[in-house]
Image 1: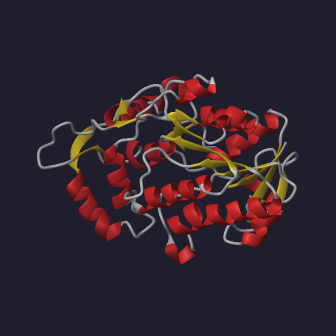
Image 2: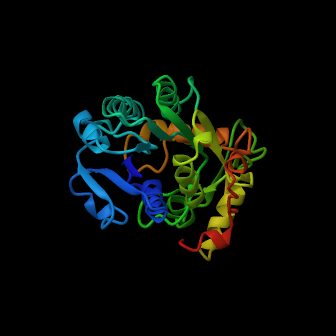
Image 3: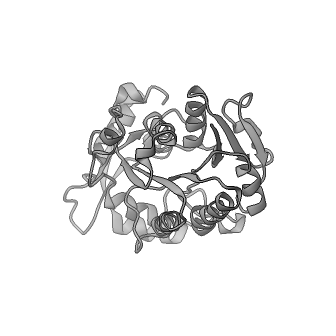
Length: 305
């Protein structure tokens, strides 16, 4: 099967590309000029040069494909560079839906995100809007909503590598965020880290399983772990111990309001809000429904750090 991929050179995209090749599929990637070195399995993949902002390039990528996977997602905007939630997480999906309809590509797999909602942050809202558009498209769709994804980043941005760089390796104590005035339950909000390999397995399986059509899968790891536990695990995998102190979310948000427009500031107000909301699955049977068993999050899975 020839599979068009929009967002195939990123962290998750590279792993999905390799899993597709291992399963005997041929990935056809939309690649920005100058990013060819980021392509996994370049001797097997077909490359189409272009930008996601160019509908003609997307249509060219989908031409001749049997299915399309849309993976693009960002955590922070850079409007001056045209990097916005609206452009990449919503409009890009709309343009890819239109290209699929015009080229006859009926099968569409979308990577969304766990915890999205219509009235959420711009990140959450645009992911939600993309889902609604795909469901109304008439295409044979499957939507995946991963929690925070971990795995060998190979130099790309990844959850644990980023936390190691910004928090564990920093001389400043690790922040245990909490709401309100008193540090009750500081760092106790929960996440459910999921392995990038498990996410890739889910995408590849869905391509050839009709039972996954018109289905949404929330992909969470098997454990609900506190922020404090996750930082402790990342520190241990890095061969370190880390001092952790309560940090009022209100103060961090106030600081971010001043500085999060600068790329060097490590976190935005919206990221703090989404982090404090937690990221666990309300229903945690998606991997069972797919017939897959997700790996545990632990030091033995973080050797790449």
